[in-house]
Length: 268
Ligand code: PAF
Image (cartoon, rainbow, N blue to C red; front, side, top):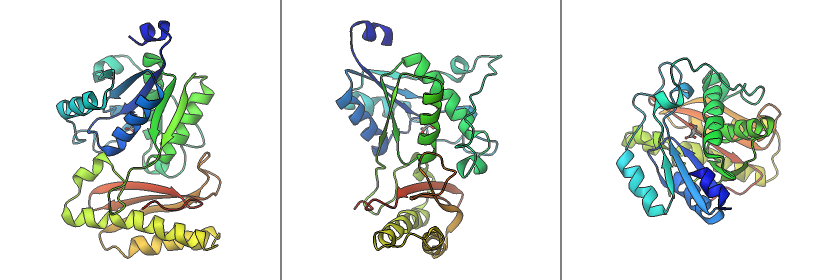
């Protein structure tokens, strides 16, 4: 289908997702529809990016609802491969992006980014998009995908769209569905910490240690929050220090991540 579109001179946008679509995904779809003649949304809960004991089995799935939302949004095709089609018996190649995958999410979720890089490369090969759309919410994933696309000469522009937030600042995520009422309230501590640090940065504070403390103090004031990391990193390498504040926090059994470039005003 995409080859035919290409022969007809039409541009193609790809929005890779794992389904359970929410306003964050729909903002990517909307942008893709504005910028391309044809839009493909892939829906694939990719088993190889989940570690043992993670939530692959219970990850929310709702194919009918997703299809209805995408039809309404005007996408041209949904690509929903099976696990057997993506990884047939004997499949044994993995893409490993070095350096940027090592800290933070890479430490917490060994093998996760190999799974992401491998599936995204396969989606790029299958769809051959001109542009592919990712959310800033997964900032380290964005850096990994950009590095991989550059290193493997994929002729695709990586477009990054802003995090979509609830009115109380909580970043939209399929995993928010796991939170009970109390945990959902506690989840606002992440965006609140980022907002506080951005305000302090705007006031002239540049010392990474002080900014880290501000993030941690706000998070630790929330009794249900267990901080995994609160760091300031460079948004491309994730190894050098920089102005991107990145958080991973457990609220009950749910692990949430969020980030914000402190050099920019916090939205809302
Ligand atoms: O961000 C996601 O939903 C996934 O990591 C992605 C990019 C669709 C790859 O499985």
